[in-house]
Length: 119
Image 1 (cartoon, rainbow, N blue to C red):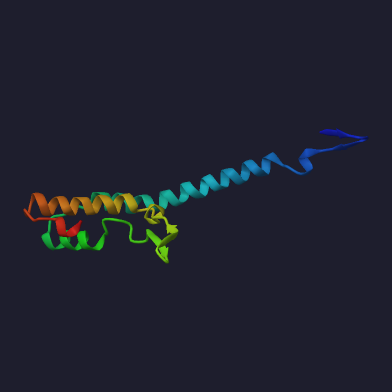
Image 2: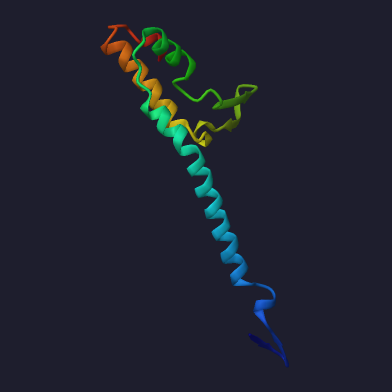
């Protein structure tokens, strides 16, 4: 409570800590539920083994080495804006990068290929 002039203001009428805690708890619950739904697919992507030259080449070409969305917007020779890389927002970003790395390693180690064209 806060005393002002002769009136008392009760904070709980404006801020209800139980509602705030409930909202924070429900947000954490939603995040955990989303992670639990995506986890089997993450594990499957991490467990994929590359054992085929054609598949390795396909993966190396399909998954880009750098984020294709990052851009500098240049107008009249001056940098006006920068669009940041959005690949990190992809929930499977780490798994795709790892899959591409395994494909490139397979091409180098097993097939003896030069992978400079994929970089």
